[in-house]
Length: 67
Image 1 (cartoon, rainbow, N blue to C red):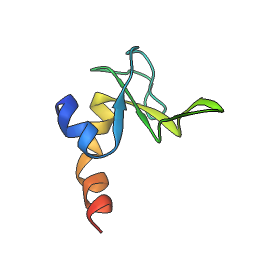
Image 2: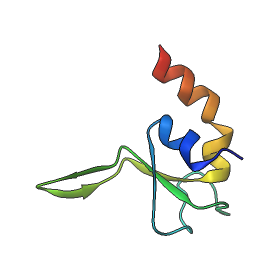
Image 3: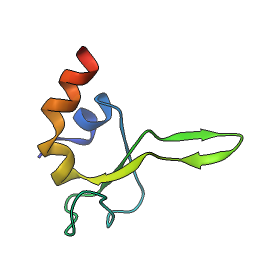
Image 4: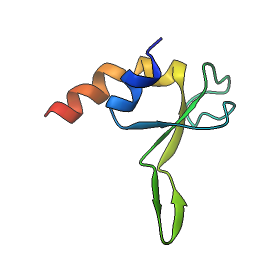
């Protein structure tokens, strides 16, 4: 599985909780937020993903960021 640093480099933000994933029913390795914004309107995220699912989609996300 990818490290916190690797996942943060592709735009994911580590969450304080570790039991949520919008892609699977069995989150593993902590939770990360995609599209995290904290502004005057409050905190918002696009979706939550566990480390297991984030690792599975890592190469696609990295390639998207580089394109």
